[in-house]
Image (cartoon, rainbow, N blue to C red):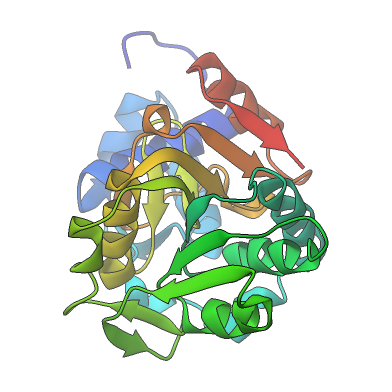
Length: 263
């Protein structure tokens, strides 16, 4: 730090998360010096971030977390369910008849799919590309109003997702209007991140193949950093989150010019 001033706790913890997104290890003495605070305080920060699943403490500091902390789809679906429904409704409202969209794997994107399905009287001729087997099955009753296209690839039962090998073949041949992308973390410095490496690669390809990029993430994801970076916050056209989102993180995203909708 260039100034010897007390750093607010939440700002300090976001900075620690961002540092871990750039390197594999952060040390307690180095963080103590950087933030001009005691090693006891830094250890408390690391303990709290470990409880949030952001990092894993080791001797002398902390390392970034890996896919081992990934939750099963059915388990994650129960968390912040009402908020995800609100986010899903706001995201589905962006879709018009005749659109072609990507729906990424995840519990929040599944909420988007449910809200699209609910628009039975007004929405038609929509092409939905997805790497989520559960989303494809959920949307099956909407055929032929919707055309549902699975990306292909290797099935991961944990998330009912399709990944490499062969998941990326489709992306080389199409260009889509809007991609709705799920994630495990949105942090102003670290960007949009995900805990699972194989799925992260598919998410990146979805983003690259889309004209409009919409990240859907409930409030618990804001301020967190996972192991795999998808993109910077400036590369996202719209973030849709929920009422539980940290106000400080929302303010920092706004300062960086991010368009955020709190559903």
